[in-house]
Image (cartoon, rainbow, N blue to C red):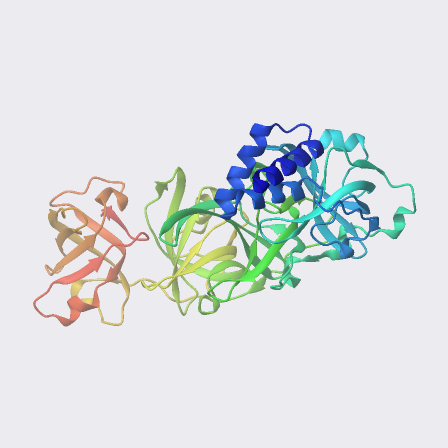
Length: 487
């Protein structure tokens, strides 16, 4: 009975502090806390009471600085500059607007209850302005971070003192190329390099959506990830724009790479006045690692595949070389047109691109981005090319060849089995072309029995050269194509 009486007293205090709440709403919130946090009903009520800005001990606290705040304080008087102001949203407890506050001792997230951005603007709460808040409280969120909560009955007004004494958020911000892993949230800025993308990953044997994008400064690009959907506002930011990221965490992933973690407390905004730029260096295929590469590399286009459409995007795969190593370049959308300006056998500079390392040769896969530049070159410095051969002319050291022949047989595989084209070359020697998918993925023409064709950029299966009982076997890759021979 004592527990029931104590719970009723807690509910009365919550209702007194939050007159807009109903008993039904309180029960819903308490049930959610009990489920999500695996706590008792009484603990859930105490948590809600702390969120409401009232401690059951009735503690009153005067004016403090951000560096003095601890969880559980209530009736706090705080003077600080508005570092950022996020978007308003509806919650189970009503309207809230998140933001951040800054003074000379630090930065802290703030939650304004019962007021949207327009309401706050009327009170003088705008980014960059110094505000006087009386009647707020401090709590830890579910991530264990301190937050200032400003209930609707708190007094919020422009500060009447000397505002110059309170710094702007810039004091605590740094460019992304200077950021390093830390145990506290950070405030960074840079240039948006890619649009946000979404993919599904397995976490503890469960599928979860992962959102990511890249931000850069100087010669460094860092991947930003979020396990919750990003606010739609970031999707309207164009790559190349300068942005600020408030309240993000910087961590090393299991591969040792630095990542920026974005969560529901983070905020991203455009600021064209930022003094930040990119520094593009020179690199080679052997020096490339996983991720977004803020460098320029000189390449030669060895073989063009057939242009395809994947996920409503135009895609062109090209086998390229820097004269020492090969890679597969995947150009997308308008970058496909840029590659056609290079032409097969031409040289070009590729600047700002993504790279993935794979076990399948060639081991490096390059991908264009919105900021990628493809600059054709007139001079030819890279001597490497794909040899045009007959069956007898194929050598073990050759990885890719171009060969012509007459189609004798087209055999379709079953399911995931590979398809086969049996041909003979101009000397009457037999060879096979093996591929996955449909032949239309490699040719824009209808290829039939008796046709003379040219197979461009086929990969040599070295095992067929060693086995005397096997015909020469060539494998088609995404950068390979087949054309009827033109006389």
